Image (cartoon, rainbow, N blue to C red; front, side, top):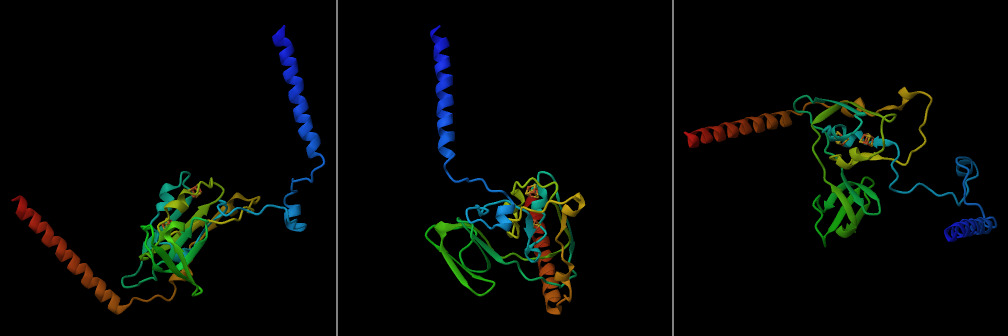
Length: 242
Ligand code: SF4
Ligand code: SF4
C-alpha cells in the first residue's frame, strides 16, 4: 500500500517539476532557428555558424596530390577512385606545399621555413604562405606539420562519390600531403545521384610540360649509379654467404 502511494507521489511531483520548467521557458525568447530561411534570408544574428571542425563536402588541392592512394585504401566504403600514370621521363612537377595545422584548426599552406613533421616541444614552427605572409607559432600550439613532397605521378582520375561517403574523415587523416580536406559545405543535395560523383583530376596541371634534358641525364645517371650500387651489394651478399 505504501509503495502504491509513493509511486503516485513520484509521478505527480515529476510532472509538476516538468511543467514548472515548461512554464518558465514560455517567457524566454525562442532559441529555435527556422533553417534555412532565417539563416539565409533574414540573416539572423543569433543563428549559430558552422564550427571549425565540421566535416562537410570533401575537396582536394590537386596540385599537391602525389597520387599515393592512401586515401582510397583507407576509405571504408571505397568511394574514392584514383588512376595515376607515370610522367614522361625527365618531366618534373613542382613539389607539394607544406601545411601547418594549429590546434585551433587554423591552417597555413606554403613554404616551411622552420619546423618539421616531428614536432619538437619548445621549438617554433614558421611558414611563409602563398601571399608571402609570415606565420609562426610555438610548437605547443601546432597539431600537425606536413612537409613538402616530390610529385612523380600524374593523376588521370580522382573522383569522389559523395553519395557513398559517410564523412568519417579517415581519408583526410592519412593524406600524405594534407591536400584532401573536408570543407564546411553541407548543402549539396541533389535529385540526381550521379551528380554527387565529383571529378577533381585536372589535366591542365600537366599542360606545356616538356622533358628537361639536364634532368633526364641526371635521372639516367642516378638510375645507373643506383643500379650499380644494388648489383655490388648483391654480389657482396653472395660472397659473404658462400
Ligand atoms: S570521409 Fe568519405 S571518402 Fe573519406 S574515408 Fe570516410 S567515407 Fe571515405
Ligand atoms: S592520400 Fe592525399 S596525396 Fe595521397 S592520393 Fe589521396 S589525396 Fe592524393
